[in-house]
Image (tube, rainbow, N blue to C red):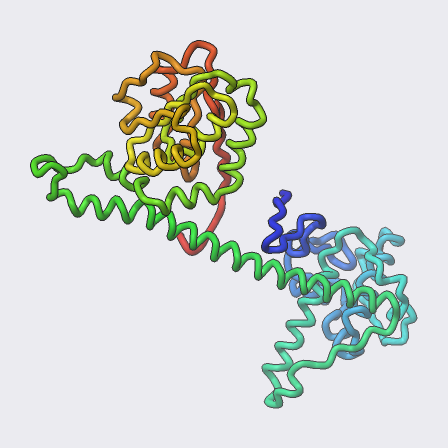
Length: 377
């Protein structure tokens, strides 16, 4: 799956990510050095090699002091023998004494079989060896054996590649933390803007607007849009705001001389876009007190001669015109339907949109995929 680039955090989408490759490789089964048996763990694989083929790879590696590159050459050399001898899988004894020329031959740094996940697992064996040394030694200075410096150009190239990949892993860890922080901030904002306001309203059911009747439940929703914070969040969403602007400015022929209805106008930003796109008249409707700030914005921009603002529920009020040519609305909420405005937009369409009129937007989609998060399980 490709990932959209996000320049502020420095995401890199031009190359395949190392951690994606790592996950795939570590989940791939590993083929025995001699026969066709497959294993999910290098320890299980080498145990099988010792018991079935008489070659103790781990012991040989330790006794001969083979480093990562030499171990890689051994694996590729044995696999090469198997590819040239169809009976190689029946080998019951195999020994190395350290004098073999292939152990230092760079030709065997090239994988004998494509996508050999066992080669990557050799690095994991290095970590296991380091840990076992540390657990058996009281001297902390002797716990981590010093890695052998690469000698050949191919070894140096591989070491440089490993270090680069380690840096990319560190970058992904920082990216994951950035995403987690952003998601937590987003979740807190949703709670603060919606759920906290609903809870506060529920506790005040005993009070009444006119001294007799308690505030209706639907008013909690509209009151949550009366403040500036939620509208500031929406206006700062450049993709959202500029998407509507570019649609209207890029299709002025559709708006020229038309009557436009803005359902849930908020601060009036979409109404002003429509007016500047050439609409003859714009009717902006909102049942929240934000309508007063929208009126001030319209006057400030000199569009009060084009835009008419009406406070009320679209399901109940009557417009000053029998029909409109275009309906615009930014009704999409979290997970598309959270703000529950779609029903109001459809009512406006059925009540006021002229035959052949335009509803914008007129189509939307929800894409769902399964995920697993142990924090919520």
